[in-house]
Image (tube, rainbow, N blue to C red; front, side, top):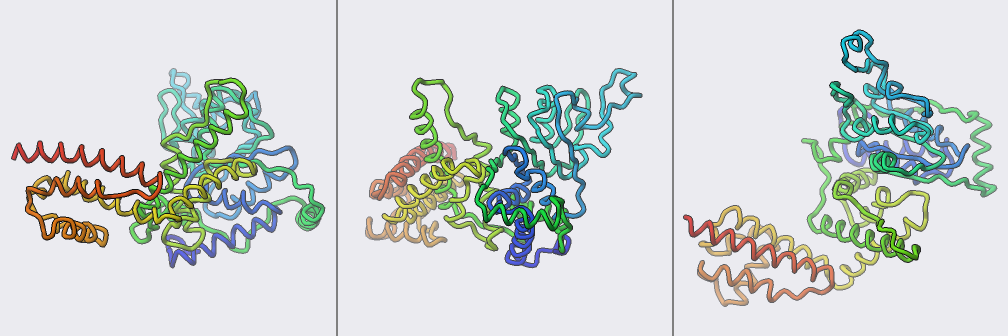
Length: 434
């Protein structure tokens, strides 16, 4: 893969698949976790691996990082005795004498592109708290020291979870989480033994590696900051995604309350920040499949961030949320109605930005197929192109005549009706000022 050259999305996909397959040959029966880890790398997020001792977390992490060249990997095994300088570098003694606490960050996690933290929950809370800003904002913030970090992705491993206020904040920094369960299937164990006989549990050099600079370029594509390549997400799919996420949150909370006899005051919550980052994951999933457009099927894989890979019940619940919403919108042509309403929202945005358009014939909005459909509705409803003073009535009548085919569309229509009312108030105020 040549540095800073994207020949095609398909070529990128083939090379990433080849890298994942090579790792899969070394770490047996972990294909889904490997795909999840590549999504973490493409989106520049962190991943937490949890399992019992001896399952191969370290080998997996090291082999993943070994697929990239031009990046420094910081490695550490956490312990309770460690202080923040283990991760940030030793204190500058000359500056300490003058009362300034500053770390010499050379060779530390701060100046590394990748990090592997083994047994992360063995670290004390003071050190974990110090890591929070580095993991989230990619900045070292300690006292008066505030410097940017090169950090791209951290893979952390643990044998157990330790839950308190600090560790909950730490867990929030790891967008991707996986539980690796031991596989006692005799054939799987046989395949693992085969690999061990050849390589002795060590990482091996890949025949072809990916430059870190190229990974950064792919990240810019994923986040919509590339000027030469883009991955399309339609407004209809974006709305569908958010409906699925909300339904999954509802199902998780219902399952949680069904298993807890008394109300603990705790619920399952997906933050707006995590929900927004699902867009990056959708584009990463499309790229891995060699596509320049996100499809509905990609939404079904969002359990990579909203559930814990390796826990079948959580994944099944997300797939149920996806399938329920997808079936509802597909069976009744609901997706078509969602597209119409979202295009109507775009029309309202145009009117809000340019209130004077309300004094012109509405046929001016006929640039897109959906908007042409709106104009055709006008002519069918009113006989001919209406005078400008009837525009308000037409907009309101369009929604009055719009009959939703399912609950998801009915809810969207309610939101659009509120948007229309707000838009007309703003437009009327602006026109009166003119």
